[in-house]
Image (cartoon, rainbow, N blue to C red; front, side, top):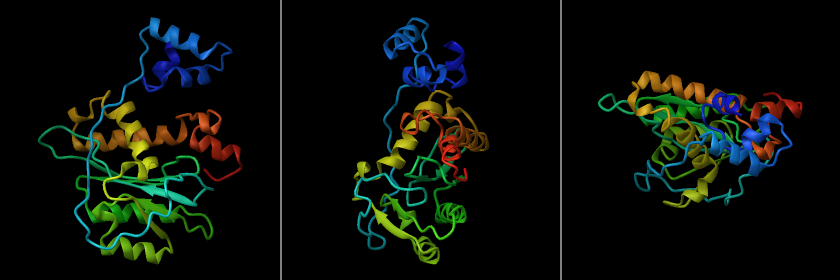
Length: 237
């Protein structure tokens, strides 16, 4: 059990540890053993970053309406976040779209400033992964980067439909918020990303997203990672 916990870098709680071990022992027993051995998964902390800068352009309707389900490449949610870096070196920034089908991070961009170029490159990378004639609904919060002319032009160019949360309403974009919450709980805080340089943080971001897509198991996917689940369904991962 300690080995499985270590392999997850302390990111797995008793449910995922039970799934990894494929044991017939109850969750209660696994939880008790983990408690006895001091194997405690990381606990979330609450912090909030907002990229909202006012009504720069008219907001589209909330077409997702908190329904974060759909077929692959049908609904994607986007957001931006500052994972953290050493004080005095500035903040590393991350912008990933999440596929509501299985939670896979479709593509991402990371850099040193939460600017339009970062968001636009993310959208271009995400669009390049779309299969066939897929044209997903792209949902976001009211951050300024999803409202600037460059972003709007790319949405039109790729034939994508916009959807946007209500102002200051994080549950409207819960699928994206959830990913960032898990990343902070499982990696940013326990691994003390704020003590690293920006370039080191970018490497940690890449490592975490690869782990998240390829290895991090989810109960909703039958205890498989997004990539494993897609492969089990005969889909391109």
